[in-house]
Image 1 (cartoon, helix red, strand yellow):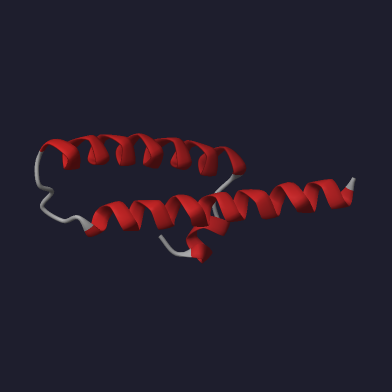
Image 2 (cartoon, helix red, strand yellow; image 1 turned 90 degrees about the vertical axis):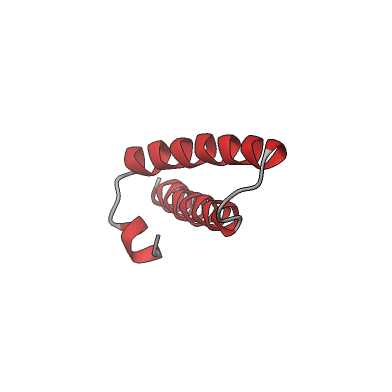
Length: 68
């Protein structure tokens, strides 16, 4: 997911997407512990997507706090 795509999302959509990715990451980590994954790079991709989403979310929080 690109940063420009993330910035187009609303705050609620970002929060929902973070939750979805965290759940997916949990399931994949659990499956990786019990069997081999087809594409282990997907774990890294999900982790990076979560980090990007949280970064944009934090930037917006700081902008809101600064404006107040």
